[in-house]
Length: 445
Image (cartoon, rainbow, N blue to C red):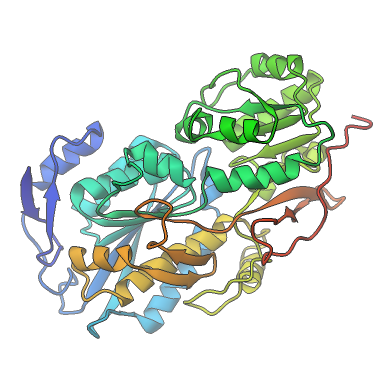
């Protein structure tokens, strides 16, 4: 184990744990040990100004790019906020904020690399990362190894927590995560599955990635949830992301007479699967699809075949929460996004905004921007955001805060566009529904 003071760290002490099991990033870690010391106690500003540097890592290109679609809007908003207000810590020291953005290109290895670059080259004091375990896990691992505070979201907490080696009692020192988990999405899906007459079998479309493996886990994944509802899981096995032929999965689902479909594919893969399923005559009455069907563009790509496909809803204009930074309600934030971009609101909008709310609250409750003070602040943090209350003291495991979840279905507007209508809210009745649960109508297809 070696200890060093990183350039621009202002003397903030960090460790490198060797060896780090990320090959490309290990090169960066080793190179940093011989880097010259720059900057000073001003937090790296170089001109006496107190500056806190925040790295922001998301997939802005590649097959997961839809998750980063709202990034530019959110960054414009929060940069304007910080320029006007700065951030003041608990000791009364005011900081300006520099946000350094990195694109993972939807690649876990690159996510690790850009996180290492933010830490070792840019000297960030904190990293925020979002959108699927392919981003959150490698970024968190780099931060944990380098003793840098990291806050992540938009990945089921089990995939983030257990996927990184956490145990029910032993979590992490520097990395924190807020989002829902498989229990929450299982409850929402079960509420919608109950509309299918006779129940029966549930087809599982699960890829061989961190999400798919977490959902497929026979102990903590979806099989116990399905069986607990008196249904039978049908899992023909994991498939690789980017698969071109889903005939084997479709055949297995047809043979089992699975009237319910669930899964967590990436957006392009579900489009491929759904088109092939229709061609081959597989017609489930209910389809609850995570990840791939979160975005209007992904549903519109299906044409009329997107009608009544269901998904989890973790943020919407109907959510009764407001931003602690701008004061905007969820409805106002979504409206501002639509007016500025000309695009329909999208779920990651609220959680991208909430990341900066949590970061700001962490700094405000911290005695300084030293790493140990920031992580102590984060460990005891409870704060209200546009995505709901984030409480890292409540569990369900260390380092994790749950967020509310409801269920929705995509309903066509008759012009090729779709609206996501909340139809299942039994676990969170404070979030209003906008319609009733409906089965997929295959008449005329």
